[in-house]
Image 1 (cartoon, rainbow, N blue to C red):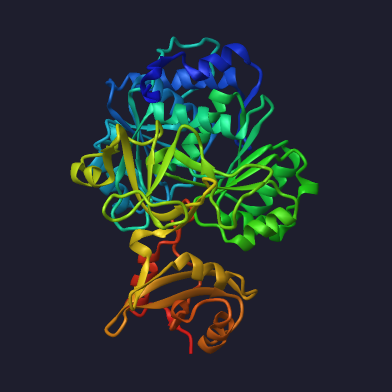
Image 2 (cartoon, rainbow, N blue to C red):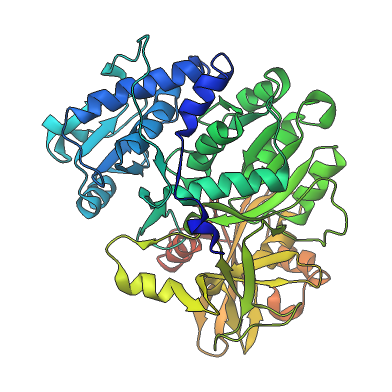
Length: 504
């Protein structure tokens, strides 16, 4: 049976919670606390307001702003209208926003000016701009809402990606539904669960939490933008049981003193967005924290694999095991499945795999294929499955460095560099080399003066000689995507144009 078509429609998820648990906490953004009933009412008022713009099913509604209770209500309102949400990064420049606007052609722009640094007046028709904070959301009635159609496209999410060009991934309502259902089965759910929300709402990790909340009946404790002290206080004082973080957030919280004894309600931290070093995971677990690694993509509506607590039989460097009914294969360049323990490209199949890229049929065809009656996403990530089904993700295909015929994983070298007490961040890239094809280069963020020779000496007994970088550069901060991934193409570009300092 095809799981994605086993159910076509369900009752509205938010309405179900509003009727069954009207007084339970739904969202707390630090300034506004709404129950499920209050969130439903606010969503209904936003739905009515947007309907006055003549929004037709399938029309795009762009959203620019930072996470808030009202933004959560907006997401539900867009889904109830049958429209397609286009969440945009509020930190983008005007030209970057205009590029995405021209690509998506939204019928309406909804924005929250709080914290915005760009002037939106030159984007689209200003008569079709709606300020989120100008919509009155107080009411006493519940607006009639349609059933949730799982087959419908709900979101056009631009991938932050590790390359220059953004791509709009089309996600169905069912992608979010099955992601929430199966991750809940994998990790377990409880009515008292509270998610610490520190992720952006224009990213699939944030959107997924919004829908998990109403499907699982859990609360969102929204504390954005991420600040170490604020997040620590929420974990300590607000009965947080679940949290999603990128490695940088966890590093900062550990340095701030986060440990199991001061977060007794916490039952799981999902660590994803970027490759987590084994040292970070070990340090967190040694502190008693229930940290599990996870791996997912925009194109899979967040999680593909996730670890479990306790960590029995988990190999070092694992990202977790597939969340049923997701299926993973490791494939070689000819499309042949690799045996356990062998590296290859990660392919994913299941009900969370996206529909394709907006207006990019060739790119979609390169990313999706049919095989053995399944639809497969070619992730362009390199990894392996061990004999017990644990996935170990290595790198992007495009980031693998080939030096003298030897394949080098930048992530492996970065993890060793990060074990040096003076290095706070590191990125490893390949640079053109006439003799070897590519040479290995490292960019580091450090709080102490260092030389290339010192770094080579440190790495000599920790890495094979061909993996050791031959050149080193110092940077104040590494460019990262909003989900925490190092943008190696930007690091490489800055090195090549001489915009960074080479270590002696």
